[in-house]
Structures are given as structure tokens and as C-alpha cells.
Image (cartoon, rainbow, N blue to C red; front, side, top):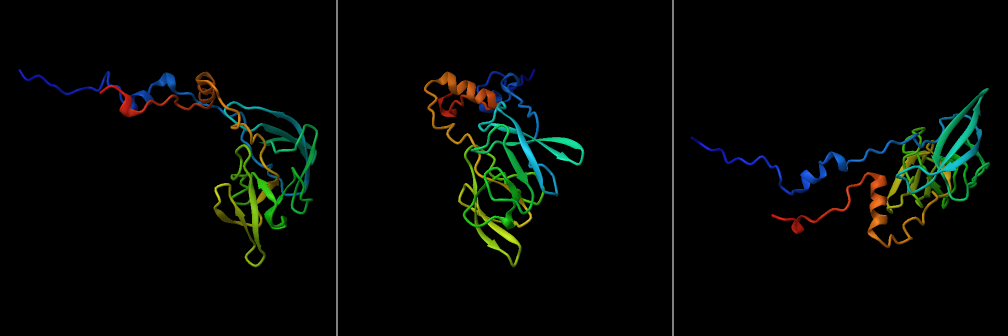
Length: 206
């Protein structure tokens, strides 16, 4: 009789098996997407509340605004300096002030922005992490493009119709506080659904 010596892999301590354990997987369900309200006309919105969502370092701000006779709500990442009850303006030619949202072609050089759109009216894709911001470097009126400097230092050309909020994202000092003990790190990564701790492969048994 021929005895098969092929291993099934059961019991082996390998990284692939450890990462595939179902009980270590955490699925984070976002309550609502964070997007710039999709409005084409100048609109005044009010910050109804500022709250925390699991797995995020920056707080969220809930906006209420009117379109005709309907009252709409939208959620954005809270900006530094905003507060509950504050009124912000979303439109094209609006004052360049903290919290207002306008198109890039109307923003002068040197202004810090956040929640910047990559394509017009996509809701905002750039600079949404705590403490991050994008700076306007150059306005090219001939080609209708705006050059911005990303947090990584890379420069990007965007269409002038892309929108952005004036100001930077709040919560920038959340990484300055030391964790001090492993228990705090455990809860930090568990809330984000990250596999932790990660054991080095060379430290595992053969």
C-alpha cells in the first residue's frame, strides 16, 4: 500500500493562516459617506452637530440645508475652527473664509484647503484625514486648472470647477498623545479592524 505524506497545512503557524481566522476579522460599517453636498447654486448650510464615528481620527459634522422647500442633510469631516450652529456657505463666488466651500478657480494662492475634489462634483477625495490640508500653489487661467500641493508634497493639477472647503481637517493632534501601554494599542487597532499585534515571521516556531 502507498501511504500519502502530503501535508494538509493544518496546525502550521504561518502568517497566511493567522490572518485568515474569521474571529480576528472586524468589519467596520460606516454610517454615512462624507461628501460635499451636491448643490449647484449658492446655499447656506448650518452645522447641526459634531460627533465621533468608530474608526475615524477626525470628528464628523452634520449639515442641514434647504433646496427649495425640502430640508436636506449631509455629513462632512469637521474642520478646525467650526462649531455647532455655525453657518457655512457652499457655492461658486463666496467669501474665502474658514468652513466655506467654493470652486478652486476662485481661491487665491497660498490658501489651505481640505476635502478637495479630484473631478468636479465627486464629493471630495483629497485631504480628509485628521490634520491634513492641501495648499493652492498656482492658478492657470489659460487652461482653467489649479495646481495644488498635497500633504505628501506632490503637486497635482485639478480642474478649476473642482470644489473644496477652506481650512484644515480637525483632530490633527490625535497621534501626539503616547499610547503608554499595549492595552490602549489593542483597543485602537481593534476599533479600526486592523490585525494586531503582528508577530515577525522569524520569531515564529518552524
